[in-house]
Image: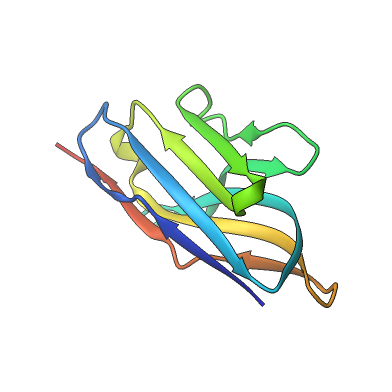
Length: 120
């Protein structure tokens, strides 16, 4: 099994910045994809940023130019740098990973989420 733990959420004023981190641990054989989703009040969960192994990062249009995803393969950690935050960015942010476990079983895993609130 694979465990994901997010950190870095909090309260920030509009225009501010936050850096989210997600550390993966457990019986990992290989991670092939890591990304970030979010779910705001009254909204469905949506993809924010994603990085497929061997591919380039991709972003939702609403965050493009403001958010940056990075992946530290050696540490099995993914980050989301969020700049120029807007109230519309308020949501619970979830880390997601696609990985093969040590017994070579493919699975999709989720963190518990971290709250990001953008407000004056």
